[in-house]
Image 1 (cartoon, rainbow, N blue to C red):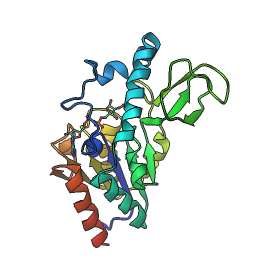
Image 2 (cartoon, helix red, strand yellow):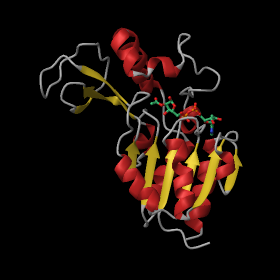
Image 3 (tube, protein in one colour):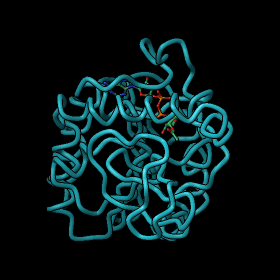
Image 4 (cartoon, rainbow, N blue to C red):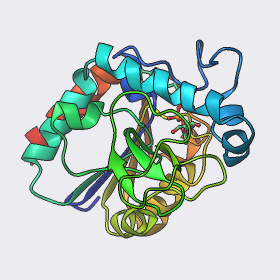
Length: 234
Ligand code: OAD
């Protein structure tokens, strides 16, 4: 195998599970009886904006009671130490990667601590509740919505992600079920590019067979061990 210089890390809900944030498809993944697929859609936002805004208000409020765990800290350590290219692509809308100190980070599914104007597209940092009909500071329209990529919408920064995967030597997927595309397809792109592929997850994901290697266990143990070994091997 050729030397590793450029790395893409994909993270999902499993990386934040040990911080106390429920995953989407595991136990506790339902919210007041709603599946995430029923709440996170443009149709739901149109038909019941109060429900959708409340769902994200509660998730945003919950961030105040959680802290980054050993997996977030290990990835931030990798970010600081790695002299090659690194891109951490997270599907998570929490802010735990950045609170741990990661900077080479991209939120492909949006962010809880941001509001999106449905009228002009401006994205604004936002804390606290976001009632439907809140006004956009940029254009004045009463059109702020949670800055979340809903099912059927195109994830953020796909151009940057495609470029990074196209140039990576190692693709690592952490704590994601592989149920949601396009993220679930990244391992295939990385393989086509000739990158080594590694999965770190509590259990085998839907695309597990696509990875060169799968290590099964909690992210809070597997990720620090992987980062330590990678940095020691430089
Ligand atoms: P899921 O809830 O689908 O999957 C979480 C994965 O993490 C599962 O495979 C678990 O086995 C694993 N897991 C749980 N605890 C873990 C731990 N302590 N350590 C390691 N792995 C653990 O979450 P995602 O794959 O992130 O989209 O879901 C993808 C997208 O679906 C989300 O970004 C969200 C959702 O709809 C949007 O909100 C747009």
